[in-house]
Length: 457
Ligand SMILES: *Cc1c(COP(=O)(O)O)cnc(C)c1O
Image 1 (tube, helix red, strand yellow):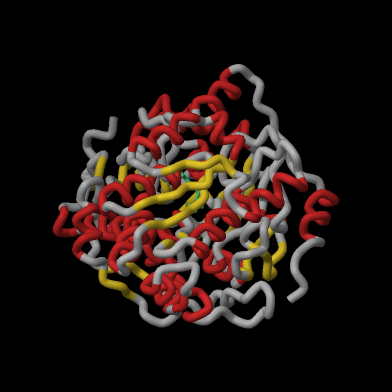
Image 2 (image 1 turned 90 degrees about the vertical axis):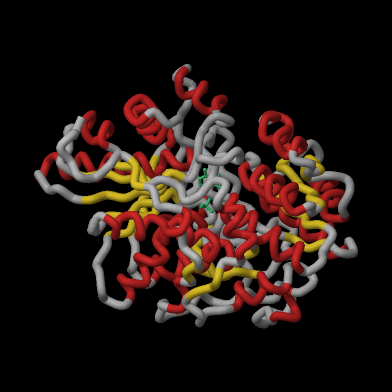
């Protein structure tokens, strides 16, 4: 081990060093993310247009491209203190195993029961719903990370929660479902027969096992037709990136403590919320020309929205009830192939991340799932943490960059986001361990087919 180093294995901030404000990267952006559009009229969604769907305070945050900082309410900070500040870990053991001169750090967001960074936004969204005097909230969940996070936040605040869970996950992934129920959420497999859109989808596709886009449509329908309820979403939206900036602010504070400047910052990208949050304060410095970080988004080769998608307005959901968002997208009816096991399966990408990528402030790479699980295994065996498959996309590219440093002899500092743990993803690990995992990369024709169905805006 590197016992002579000044840098500890874990850089912790004290509670009093925890950020008191979230950072809104949009304030620094020269080209702001495009506004959400009404799906019927194609007019930008105003505050009033969004009120039936979202909580008032969250709409303000969603539409605010100007204020760089938002005070984190005391009640949310109190909750954060149960599991934050999260550690920034120096991956000494991984560096040694790779025999690289690179210095690798990871920000670990898995130290809470829901097992991922999603709790950072879940508590914020639940808090504003409660403050508005609402009775409850609705949402969708795929594999269940967002649903478990929101069920923890809702239980803490005494808020009712209705989760629409993609049917195939509801049936095949009972563990997160039971965590949600333990925290008091009602969990319904989607498409259900409870909603108009669910009945329509079930009639059109008998026996369908559901999709995230379909579950979103159901959750929105229930929120807008039930008195005292609103809908909340765990990624993609500007407000979620705002809340997740706590990751980047803590990372920066921890690095600053030891005068460390990263060369490369890496995050996995599904809907873009952890990546957007991790890079937020660093990106602002880059845009202002103060620093020149290399920033890399990593996505699955089987769901490559940034690297192979189109930057255009698209539906956020299958039922086409949600506002249109301008984002890198594969088309709202794109569904990753059945053998895809590693999460990050949303068809679109956060409008903030999409705009920053389009403006050339960051790179994107796609990686195949077997190489992701190889990296996950290497990481588990050296650093001890069993990583979430999603997080392991970032591990893959961090390892690749560290190996490049080995060739060139450069002592680069690499920081990546370790978004969560993989305890509930062991079916995917089983597939990998049994050599039954394969890679599937969609053909250009397949992508062209779903991209051809983008709305004409
Ligand atoms: C949901 C999730 C992601 C991907 O979501 P983003 O919005 O892209 O951050 C990544 N890692 C874990 C562990 C997750 O649960």
